[in-house]
Length: 90
Image 1 (spheres, rainbow, N blue to C red):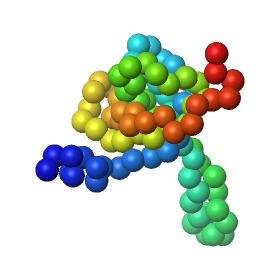
Image 2: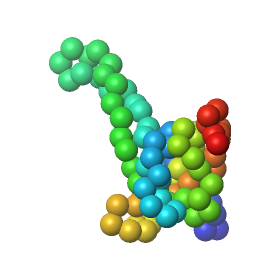
Image 3: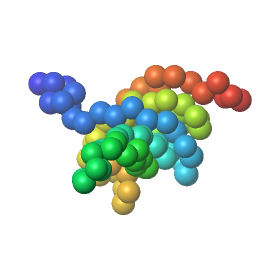
Image 4: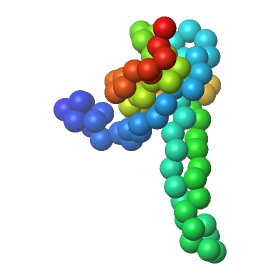
């Protein structure tokens, strides 16, 4: 039953932009919103701190993240899976 509820949490696909400490990465995800007056779509992005339990992800990887309980002052997401590895991975 708990897995069913957990899977309904918000999940987002983003790109790892930075490694910031042990078991923590910064993930950027982009989205579009309409301008309030002119209705043209504007590109926006959000950077979130994400928990990476096994330190598997590298900068440039495309990852799926999911909302979770607060893990620290800034971390509110965790990595579910690495959907695409970076082409320049070392």
